[in-house]
Image (cartoon, rainbow, N blue to C red; front, side):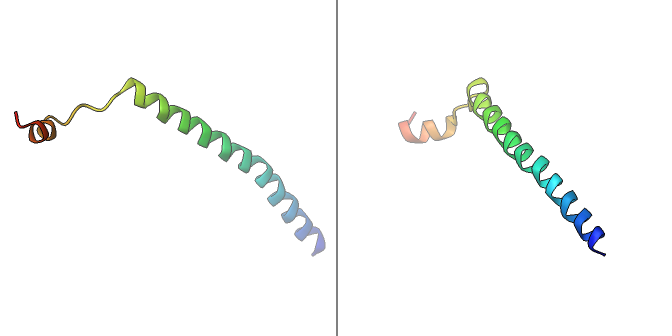
Length: 56
């Protein structure tokens, strides 16, 4: 029984060692992508809101 528990703990440890850095890298990549999207795809101005604010 101890062998099975030991194997499960080693497998869990290995999975976490792989998953945690991968999670951090994916979040950084997504964050950088989102920042680049802001510059490449600026939001279109809300013309209705502009007209209300400036009375045109």
